[in-house]
Length: 172
Image (cartoon, rainbow, N blue to C red):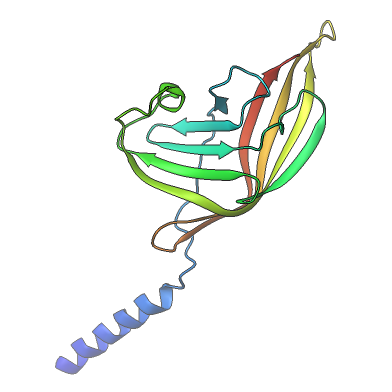
């Protein structure tokens, strides 16, 4: 009887060790149907973009002058030129949290993970009125290839083609 229990414990232990490869992808980050926002009002001076969904947020910092109201595509690397943070909060956040003059006391940041790798691509395109042909705005489509986030336990979240979203600026 003791041999069977010992054998069972050994098999369970072997299974647990065999399943922990250290590079476990623990989750995916989804911010579908959320807008890319900034504390600047639809202009190209923004160097801090964010999006949030209830108790979580993505924060992207950009080099000055990257956003321009002209058709172009720019690329850069994380964490060299760009920084991306994933935060979780104790309560739901709003735009006011990110744009406050002084950091609010609540909600509390539960965790913050900084991306350790990835390539940012920002493709800027003009958007015209279909009827009149007048220029309406510029859309800056932001995507990240080979995004890597590593939490404090060493678990990785890897996304080969992460769409951050579209930031819109008004015509000059």
